[in-house]
Length: 338
Image (cartoon, rainbow, N blue to C red; front, side):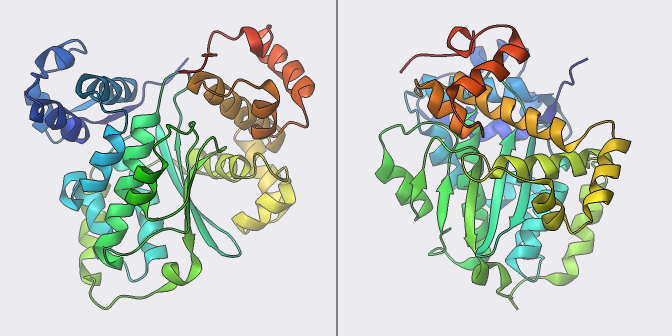
């Protein structure tokens, strides 16, 4: 039985406002999803995350701006994302702020996950949308641009990540993306992420209001939407596995090291959740492959296979037939070049 993920409705307001700023009435767009404008200002009203994604894309189509999510994310203010925005101003270091942001992210929405994964050079801040078979470009670009904007509220306007990775294909507007992020942007990647330098993560700030953190967390706790510990472990393992796609395949020893736990403890914990490391690897490979097929523009089965962690196209094709009973070239998800 599938889960209907929900998200706070006020988070769609910037997209509705962008439509109306162009002189277009957004009433029809909202009513098509059973919504009214009054729903968007109710602090506890939620809408299905799939609806949220659809409205984002429809807004971009209405205003004729395929980079609408990117532009909105770059301009949004911290107060527009609610209490989560205050976490940047109540944590001693950027690493602590991003860890808190990930932990409390599900207080305002589901269907997505943020995870800070430490690397030898710093950390990867990975953003993943759980929904499959739907365009997530507007949401991904909005979310990563918004994260950069929030980080700059404490690090200064000149701050930039080392790199930005996006799962969808290059829209031929590289300068716009590099202008927003202030860093090289790579498209068609296995995961969406900001690559952040270690020295930035460790930098302490004496300007933040540490005493407010317990108050902010108490407010977020009232939302009662924090992911259960059982879900958190599977999600974190999945993110680490996905991060390695397209490169050296993730091994359980590597994942256990990053989680700071013995391999046997990880295996036992996953077994208690009725899953295994092998199951999670398979699920992540399927998720990456289906996402690339749905996004389109990548025509080579071999490219998709490598991005999803397979040795070549034939191995991937056999795995895909196991999932669906048909070849990936005949997948209903697959789209041609746009």
